[in-house]
Amino acid sequence: MMDVGRHPNIELLTYSDVIGVSGYVGQFKAQIRKRPRYVDMTLCTGCGECVDACVYRKGVPNEFDAGLSKRRAAYIPLNGQGVPMKAVIDKDTCVWLSRGKCLKDCVKACPTGAINFDQKEEIVELNVGSIVVATGFEMFDPKRLSAYAYGKSPDILDGLQFERMSSATGPTKGQILTADGKKPERVAIIHCVGSRDEHANRYCSRVCCMYALKHAHLVRDKTGAEVFEFYMDIRAFGKDYEEFYQRVQEEGVYFVRGRGAEVVVLNDGKLQVKAEDTTLGIPVQISVDMVVLETAMEPQRDSDKVASLFSISRSASGFFQEAHPKLRPFHTNTEGVFLAGTCQAPKDVPDTVAHAGAAASEVLSMLSRGEVVISPTTALVDEKLCSGCKTCIALCPYTALSYLAHNGTGVVQVNEALCKGCGTCAAACPAGAITARHFTDQQIVAELEGLFKPSAMAKELASI
Amino acid sequence: MSENHFEPRIVGFLCNWCTYTAADTAGVNRMKMPPNVDIIRVMCSGRIDPEFVLKAFALGADGVIVSGCHPPGDCHYSNGNFKTFRRMPLLETVLAQYGIEKERFHWGWISGAEANKWTQLVHDFTEQVRTLGPLDWQHELASKED
Image 1 (cartoon, rainbow over the protein chains, first blue to last red):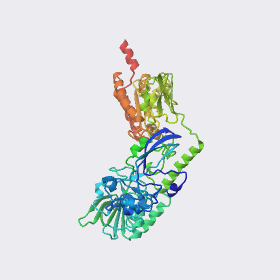
Image 2 (cartoon, each protein chain N blue to C red):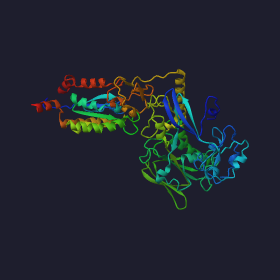
Image 3 (tube, rainbow over the protein chains, first blue to last red):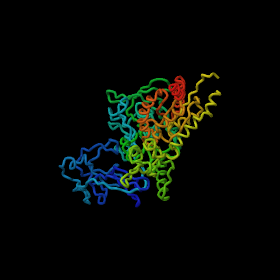
Image 4 (spheres, rainbow over the protein chains, first blue to last red):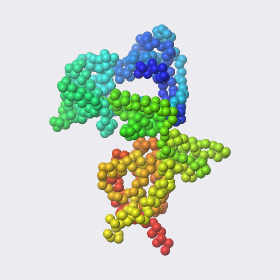
């Protein structure tokens, strides 16, 4: 990411949203809203003086630490490691911006005078040749499954929270501690929270098994606590993953084959995990000091809006739909729009890197070719027959049809770069002016007529 | 073979990406089903002009199946299946006006992974049309004119 920020040919627009996309492959027009960060990017050096000076000492939950620590209104994203490494002022928590009353110590503290509360939101329009959608995933919120008692005890963590806790830059500087500051003696790790579950998501989230094993390893390594993994199946599918699974087994982690059914917070604050051990065929109850819920990857909450913005579709699980599950896994059905990473499906890091690299190289090869190959299956409007009623325009899922007025009348035109050849316009055209190439009315009627020729199949069936 | 033996002729309009794939998978997996359904592939169920269904009945089909991708999100073309969803109920009323029993026309959704569902539909629908007997509208029309 650091290299991306430094690259002379890459312009990073952080703290920005795409709000509109028009055009087609080779000539997209993207409207981007740059949100005000109230810090002049050219002046800010990322020294962090404003963060220390910020009067909002109470703090709000730090998103990057999954809520385990607090941050102030002025902060450098990703605990000071964000790209670009510049401060930002959160307008919802900033006392000056939300209440209009503040000593503005940050302004006084800033050595370069970078803080500017008069910044306004800005809309920029960019001409781009292709688009890569890499909007990532969202962590499943375990509150949706009440049996896991998430939120009822500070020692019930989700996967991301544990990940932050065990990170050297995290809220405990990498120490694994319960809420009362002690090392846990027994830890339960519950797999498949929010995945492979009829009550949440039916799909396998793919990465949880391996990160759960990593968590087990970290607990054993850092605390020596007893670890109980509640799993249905271990899916160690990648290179060297099975070996890692075996290593974790050898480290003395207890593997209990059975979905963690319930987490109970006892009166003394201790936790109890209930499950069925399916290999022994008996219900088990285990008392622990800490529970880690290995939560699933989910599509971003606004993925429906993003999908319609870029005219891409979503699969049943809500992730963006690739053009072909095996042969075109990072293409979308909109020419020139590609997918990278977990916005398409849950992926681990190596797969994400491979996926994103493939998308980037496809973009590069398109740019260097200078022309695109499109499918010959497109719609064709017979301008002599088209009455310009515009029935078809609203039906097109790709906005490939447009109305062209000339000489008082008008006809509809097909943009072949946008048209995917679904033929829904041809089915609806009242004048029969639209031909769906390779699936024309004549071809389909000829197929029907061929079927019902009195000879062939009737005789065949009659002879049965 | 007796004179009364009736094998229904059924036309299936299937979208390329879901139901056609399911039918293909059913074939590859050697699933058993009656040979009565003739498939016409279209790119999207949204391509199916209701006139095609009428034409199929006019030419001698005893039953017609229209099948595409599951709404909402399965459609390869974002929302072609929604257009089918809107058109087919209207077509049903038109068929009723022609006196074609509603049991002769099936429209629905089968995804590429649901080869079982496709074979089940072919079984059930063939039997359903078989019990109705031939559509034979030409014969009926001729007898009315007499």
